[in-house]
Length: 166
Image: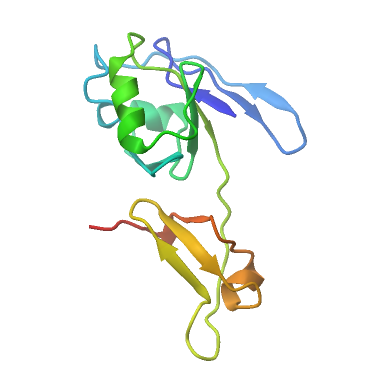
């Protein structure tokens, strides 16, 4: 898990798959005085119905400098578990907190997979939701299933283009 966006800068504890940890350097961020427009005022957007995910990060923003990445799952805010909160509920909670900006914990579970359509031109999965899109069903022996996609996965981008619905 990574922690981001403390007032002084960032506190980040990264854990690699091998279990080694490295602490990141602190730096000063010019930040808004309140959480009124969180998360946009800090340079990122959220989506999801519980859990919530980072959908986009503005290059050069405090979120960008802190290392937040599209696809990161928000797991806690100021030490409070938020894995089951919808995005509107998470934003409402963050905007009530006194710490500016609130410290958030995220985990990255992003994997890139390549899926070649089958002979019928289909990929073998269905999606639901809006931002992010969730894989509702995936045929295990279909092109997507053989590539490692599973029901419950989220699709963040296709061919390098972030997935957004209107």
